[in-house]
Image (tube, helix red, strand yellow):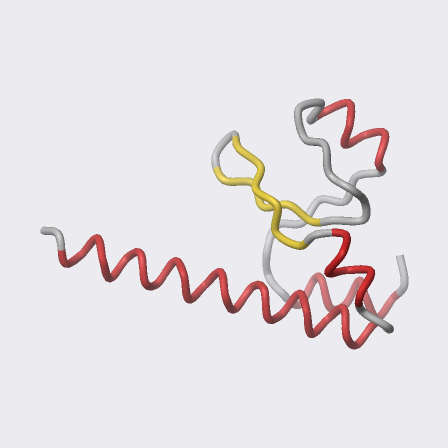
Amino acid sequence: MKSDWKEFVESRDLPVRFLHKDEFAEQYPDKMEEFPCAFLKKGDELELFISAGEINHTEDMEELKTLVSRKIQELNLQELNLKDLNAGEK
């Protein structure tokens, strides 16, 4: 793993696990996605986080970092909105 990518991943303060394609297929045989891609694990379920198309569309490491940061921010905003909606139901 390149050092600048490793530093970026570690700076996100999120649990991250990298799997080779064969390892992923062995552990998650029901997930048939094009690689490279990224998933979120929610409980026992995996949800596609960043598709191969999105990753392959980036031209360099900085664009990939921007994509990951944007997707994390979008996810955080969605979770905040859901919390707000759930709080309003009480």
